[in-house]
Image (cartoon, rainbow, N blue to C red; front, side, top):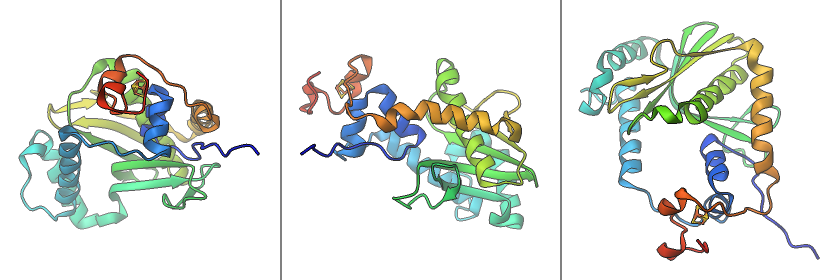
Length: 238
Ligand code: SF4
């Protein structure tokens, strides 16, 4: 009798990146659920993400110093949130979509096919959403094309699928520790006429991950930081 082989049935940008980096490590982490200890940087990132949410929604009264480089933006957001509330501004949401990109609950384990985590979204017009992802750590120009742009594209794809009346999605990254925004000028703009190509590009990119049953190791530079490496007592042979 053929043995049952685990496969990925859903994805997110971080899971996809993990698999593209090393399929074996992604399997250990996401399918076998081997624990991976968090780092100080990750804990700090989560804590500051919560500060962003709490400041915008008014839970935090004082602007934390970690957000000061974007102080005027946060102040304006908070003032707007006080008036508009969750009608036009949404913070820290997770969006779920099924295989047809139809919105569904992110925790619908049978149906949800892709999950998109959102730091901040705002209707800047009835047909235009702005998405901002607040980041800690260093901006790395060399990661822009293969890492930052796809991440912004997925926000655009998700927002256009979730809100049928929306024609335009602007998306940008904001680096809280340095005050850098990416892109530096106008946010990246995604329009409804691009949506079929955007969906198709994601489907093509994620397809190999969703059929993978071999989970091959990909030894390289990443092994130095991999929790599963042999020298760390992990199950990998590298
Ligand atoms: S040590 Fe390298 S090859 Fe092994 S799981 Fe980690 S990243 Fe993959």
